[in-house]
Length: 293
Image 1 (tube, rainbow, N blue to C red):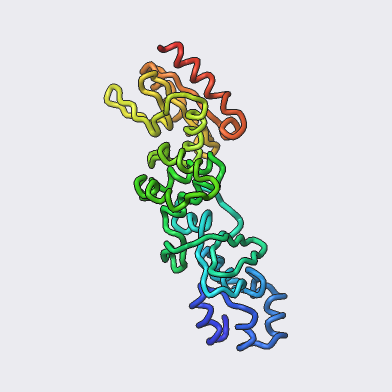
Image 2 (cartoon, helix red, strand yellow):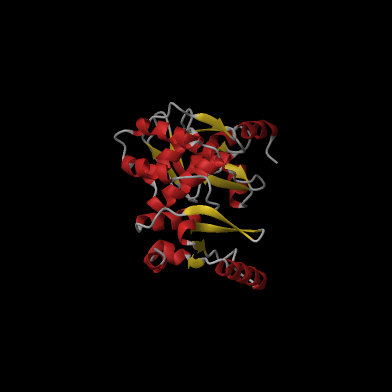
């Protein structure tokens, strides 16, 4: 347990405290012993937490502010998206904006940008949800960018808010990418990989697939990850976690057979194909469509 005065200060700082703050309650020798014994853990240069205090994202953000000696910081990009809950890229680094400090630390990236739209989330400041989503739509790889936009809309950001945010990013890198991807985004995809798979189909020039397409027949409802109703073609993303084990195999086989009996052709995409060789599933789909014209 921290001594009372330092404990009170650390509570106000999401559990983080500096070496200098600790010196007001402990001797240098005591601090060195606590650090050496692993009771106090270093977060950023000159900033620590107790071993028993979990290293939450708000704690890391406050620790970064203390390490930078900044009056305040604003979480942005991947870090802000993680705070809100619509992030799809697990960045090991914190992404922050500060009013003046431009010195980064290991595990920390300080961006140069304005942040008049900061809001409070989980006790720390972050760029607004629309600003965060558009920032990522500009700066992430296209596959991750669309997955982020899909999840942001599913999280609750209307597409109109994203479009209204675009003018605030005029002349910034990646604006064209964001402008093209926002109209493609929707909140129907249930996983980032479904979003990435959908974008591969669009990039291949296929008709835009419908996410989470529902198929009713004989009083039974089935849902496929992606589909083209007019062609009776379905595309499923094969997740290693969802499609593994005997029970999953039995379930998937029954589902596959049911779709076939209803006149549907079912294709599958793996993560390797989505990332490295999408033509392995987009071209067979294209050929199947040509046969059904």
